[in-house]
Image (cartoon, one colour):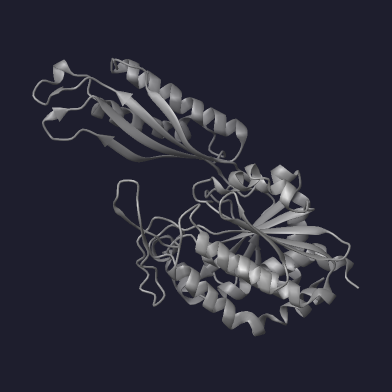
Length: 421
């Protein structure tokens, strides 16, 4: 298979410049979830130019391109398209200055702060190379461009809009994500890779009063403070030290002035876990603690819990992960690694689950290798290497794009290339 991959990837030089231009264009013009109309059109146009049968508008802005090339396996490769409401601070000449109007009529900046522009470009490149070397492989390749990953809504939207009826059923689904490792790095991991994520809004009810008369109140600010502190014990005291989990209170809203005790406080929480049992235990503990603190504070009403978003855990299937890892080892050599467990989350696994097929999801690096090496030497990687969702996150163009295109192509050919000839 490595010889087949090298044959197909020999064409990378001919498309590299165009892919770099596409990447800079996508980075300059990011779009939020379910608004990726321009990005989706770019992807669809690129697929049509390469001879794919294209279907647009799945789940709003989702796109699939199908290239049938004789009998053989069906491989689906997925890239997410959406950006984030972040003001870019990279200083790049192709930095985003895009804004949108939010629900309150205000100006909202938009940035590709998670690297989805890398994912789109890499899949476009893979699709072009496979189309240009059909003599090297057999089967069907399906390129899927998914909207709204950041909100956890895009995969479900495509599925509800009939994805499984509008695409050939794949034998395997492949996906990748750029992370703050050195550019050129590829990393696979069998089993648990990305965490489940649950975001909650909790409303705590109190009794308002004058700031000078706290005895007349049930102070929801003090209640909220007690809840926040007590929630820190869920991970540290209710889970084994070997069980990874994260509970973060990311937002607290209460009150409107210094001399008024409000009648409610609203907390927004994010929970990361890696298996269903831990997920249930942590979410139950949060509700138990909140209710107990409300009772201790004599809250006049029961707290309210609202689920804002929910992502499943990403648990890579063993066999396809082994196959991709072996292919990466043969092609990338020492740049192929086993990646660490990640606390980020994804909705991609809903797509193979809808088809009832296995999947594997891997990482590629996007940080300038020299910058990463210097930070590693000083022990300051966490401080000096921008991470996903940072306003400073900006994968270097190369070798990030070459690695992304090559990784997706090598992985796809681990199925498609084995029956060629």
